[in-house]
Image (spheres, rainbow, N blue to C red):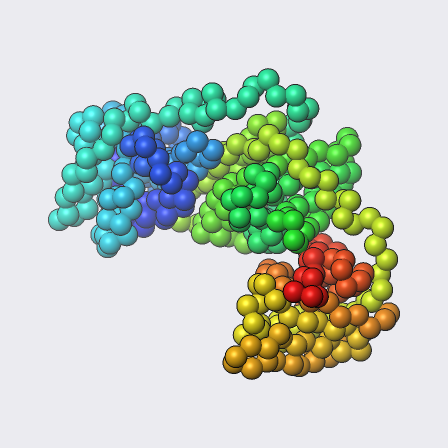
Length: 406
């Protein structure tokens, strides 16, 4: 390989694919980004950069790739590996406009930018997995009895995908002792709706979005948190708000493609799905009677909960008290520094007066990811989940209260 690329584009491509490098990998090739010349002519407007260079990182469960324009200086298109531990910080510090990448030997690659010249020791490119299946194909039970899921594709603007993923990512279980399947986001297709679901057993986050197709029955795909994080990271870093992002899901994988990017030519992601059945979250939503229903300004509630949690005694364990009435009363459990008490004016209210003890961080997590000015709250009782949502029920969260006698 002997190619020339814009240093800025190389820097952005490495930043995009870096999170796909597996943590604690013992195979040296998996700690590298593979650079491969692809025979695609996408940049006819610039004859100096008529080729495409793919920068790719992969692990056992996900593969992330970004393509950038390049000029091929020689016919030899042999792959090279760029060790991320050295190449990433080096390219970040390079201010030269162009960088030349060339293969020296099976274990060496050269980076040259004007008066800079670096020779990096690398693993043999042949050690880099040809495909994800060659890495992890033997780690999963191919005789599993779970039903086969059909292939489905769905497209939204990048801004919409980011909003949907962030609207559920915060409720994914972070405790590694939790059930493995809870460390994921459920993609559920039913009729003309795509619903994203996540839960850590103490709260339930839902995002609903209309799609332009009707599914035959309910289709459920369990997307691991790693894939969700890679999607959020890459789309936030590389796409425009109106860029169309295409997601494909089948029985084993989720695949993302986007060709409308800034800084790089295109993005792609391939990740394994979790082959466990997601819990039936709908049981939580049945048989609950609304005892109080109100609306409140999001900003007013956000700031009030933030202030009260500062004065709370171990807010994660003891929480804060929220009293739902004509106003929302918020008070903290006092400690050595004092206690907090304030009231938030509601925009509307109907029902009875109810007090619940609740984890303030869970409330803040939801208020941080929604951009609705008005929040709708429904209370079903002091021992049942409290509903927080928008007026159109597109993004909502159910939060279990804490025991009052804690």
